[in-house]
Image (cartoon, rainbow, N blue to C red; front, top):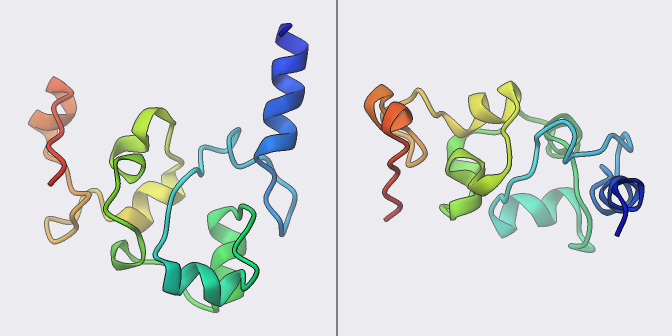
Length: 112
């Protein structure tokens, strides 16, 4: 696969169903609970950026809306937008996604 073919695939594979923004390019690849997702997307399939998901559920997301899965812990290999980091509550000690400065520096994350 050429670089252009890869770019084309990524663009087609990650579009927001609301605004059509590429969720991969804006670093908003995440998993929320089934309850939250089905409220926004009854047919289950697809992707939404944080803003479009919040518009559909008519409120701001909190860390309690996200699944406790590796993807949501420092991106699971993907980047995380400032908006996603805010909603995950990474700076909030009550959030399961909270990390300390020491963990961030060392790169160690323990997912329970």
